[in-house]
Image 1 (cartoon, rainbow, N blue to C red):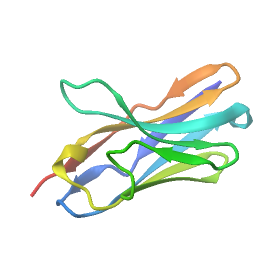
Image 2 (image 1 turned 180 degrees about the vertical axis):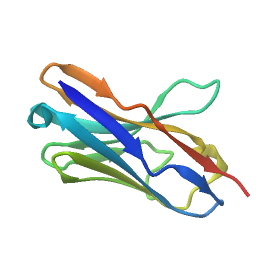
Image 3 (image 1 turned 90 degrees about the horizontal axis):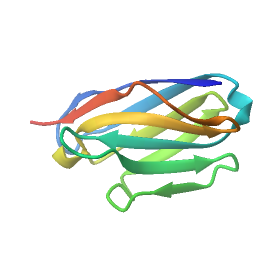
Length: 114
């Protein structure tokens, strides 16, 4: 029903910024909530941020004030990441809740290191 592809990950120094993108395709008009998750090696996947159809946003405490989730169009999700630190190193995944269930992207690697 919905396919997601993340991009924009890479290597960044502590204190730097990255902007992740998630392109949605398929039955995109059935999406009512989109989220960003992340997973570091050996860790469980954790929730990062949510944006609703009405553009209401929520964030994990660990990223509040540093990350911003936005949905520029119905098929394009973003995560602006500022003031990055090594604890932000992880594979970042976008997620879409829609009328037929939940879809995930393949992930994009973000590495914060000097």
